[in-house]
Structure formats: C-alpha cells, structure tokens
Image 1 (cartoon, rainbow over the protein chains, first blue to last red):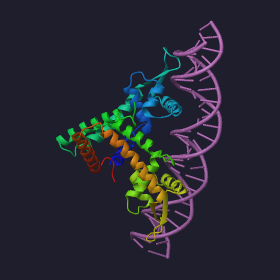
Image 2: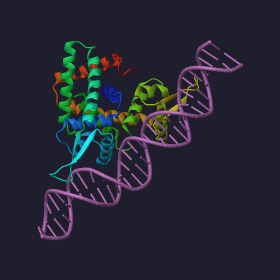
Image 3: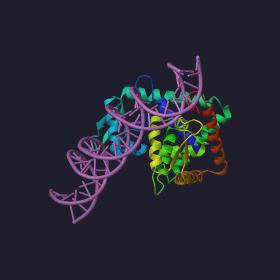
Image 4: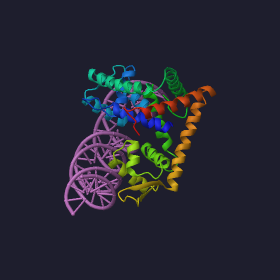
Length: 140
Length: 140
DNA sequence: CTATAATACTTGTAATTTGCAACTATTAAC
DNA sequence: GTTAATAGTTGCAAATTACAAGTATTATAG
C-alpha cells in the first residue's frame, strides 16, 4: 500500500514538473520548494534535508543557477557558506509546480466526501509527525 | 505536507534497499516488488506500471538478470514477449526489503495510539483508491 | 599567536543511468 | 501477402552520481 502510494506521488511529482515552458526534474522541484521554505538556507542545509550528497547538490545548484532559477550569495558572517534564494523566475516555476500539484490533489479529493477528506488530511499530518519522531529514518 | 511525505518515503525506500549483503537501488526494489506481485508479467507491463521507458527498463532487467535476481523467459504464446519472474535470490532480497519497510512502519506507528493507527491506514487506503480513480494521473 | 583540525563548498574523473532514434523479431490487420 | 503494429534490444550522446582530492575559510588547542 505504501509502496504504491509512494510510487504514485513520485509519478505525480514528475508530471507536475513539466510546466509548459521550462521543464525541471523532480529533484530540482524539491530543491526549489525547500529553498523557498527555509529562511536563508545554506547549501549544506538543503542538501541534508533532501538527503543528497553535497557534491551532487553543488552541481545541481550550478545548473539551477544557469537556468536562472536560483541565486547563490556568499554569507558575510561566514565566508565558507553560500546563502541560497530563488529568483523571480524560480519562484514562478515553484509556484507553477505547486499549483499543478494542488490541482491534482483537488481532483483526487473530489472522489471523497467532506468527512473522508478531512480524515485523510489529518491522517497524513499525523503520519508526518510520527515519521519526524522516528529515529530510524527521516531525521531532519 | 504531501511533498514532505513523498520525500520521506523516498528516503525510506533508499534506506530499505541496503540489505546487508547485496544492495539494490530503489528502482530495482520497485521492479522486484512488482514482478513478485503480478502474475507472469511481461516487460512492457512492469515498465508501464512503474512509468519507466521500455528502453531503460530493458537495461535495468539486464542488470537484475546478471545479479541473478530476475529470470526472463520467452512466452510460447507470443514470442515477442518475455515473461519475468524472480529467482530464489530475488525473492529473498525482495522480502528483506519488505521486512525493513515493515519494521520501519511499525516503529512509526508506535508513536500513535490504536485509533490513530487504524485511521491512518484506512486513510492511506482511501487515498490510494481515489488516486486510482483519478484520470489526471496514476492510471494503471 | 600559530599550528592543526574542522567545515563549506568545488572540481576531476570514472561509472551509471537515461532518452532518443534506429534496429530486429514476431504478430495482427486489411 | 504486403503493410502496420507490438515487444524488446542496441548505439550513442547527454545527464546524474559518487568518490577522492582540492581550495578557502573558520574553529580549536597548546
């Protein structure tokens, strides 16, 4: 059950990344999402959250910068660190992906009644919290 | 919320693939899982379920065969088709991954009470069913 | 205050994965 | 019986990734 759900969300993620004009990969969409969410994140920070090697991540950021979706600014407090942020274009792409995701989820939830919808959303929230508590995996 | 959950399950999938002896990739684990689940599946069938190109899939199966996890037998009814199955070793790896997954999920669910647990599981089931109904994505 | 260690990030290189186009082999359709 | 469709493979080029080794900066220890 969880296998199937994970796979479906993976597919969904892929589909939602082709936003008409500029296509990005699912990994890139997660990077954009997470940069947007965090407050002045460093490379290390985002890489760790996403569970990718810093070396791989470095190059991914490089391509996102050449795509003009991400900015990388040296941190004045610690000059080893770079602070990441989204460009206007990056924000736009991120929100396009978000919209596609939401449209899909709305469609999925349309097959449920009000009560089911609320139950499912509460359940996912609960599941996320429990996963965050778990030591085995998903450490933030 | 869904982004985070998806990412966590992705990470979990990665972690569960390193089964001590022989490591496999998350994609390979999904292939093994799906071959085990379907009845005498063809290449095309599994590739479609997993949403991978048949050309990529062909090569993935090749490596799984050299790893001695998968068998590929020509279908006598249609000689264009190959029927896939797991070797004893493949079954063993698949069940090891499954066990690791289950152990993790058990740990996650240990942070909930009986009622919450049941609600979450019912919700995931419901969500899966609704996704299956959806035309936008996740067509089987 | 200086030498050493640790941190943040980048680059070289080699291996793996992937996607497109073109291919073979077999079956279906007209 | 020719043509079209289906199942799968391979060549090749591009993208992704991982390890090791590198630079630059900051923290630590004596």
